[in-house]
Length: 252
Image (cartoon, rainbow, N blue to C red; front, side, top):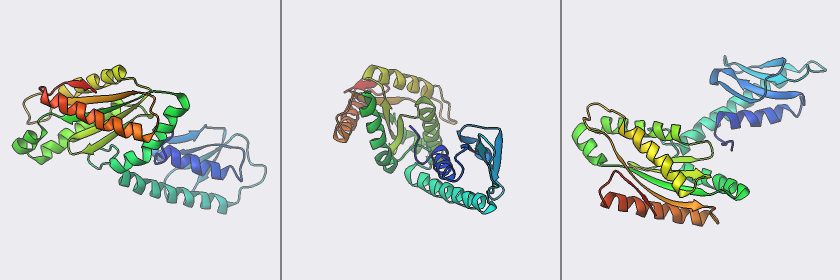
């Protein structure tokens, strides 16, 4: 699933526009960002981009000279959509962790739901919470607490796939929506996350950091209402994990 706000999603839209005039265009590359859509080809056209390096890859050379104004217009359009994507990403992501925020969840959830319907793939919902996080802030200060949140955000990013959603749901609470995962598979993912988080050392905290989690779903959702119900059930399961001693995973 190509996310709309990703650099690849932006480049794909510009490539499709370029193909209206140059059907032999098969790829668009933004080297400074390490992004490429389509494929590299023997013939390239540089696209003006204010010092950045963008290249249009062509399978065969143009039959006629390409008007310079077209390439300048293409570069200007690319700048505009990149700027829009950057502002959009700021609106839909949490600035501290880089994960989706609740607004981002609202935008991305229908895409994941459509993917699940198309492939009849199960979806699991996970609510995660950092144990005794208030004590971290009270004892070591908010800058240390922020570093703990950043570390967990990085672990979550590295633990999910493109089809999954990782969300900072609020405070020290995080949400995962895992595509193609039944509940036991989701539990395996969460246990790996908990192990990695436990092994993080954030100075000056002298003890291991732990997580509690609740898991719901694990089936093909009937619709958005089903997913929202699973979020509530996962939240209740998380509460039970807290009440029964923390540092554990509970299935709804």
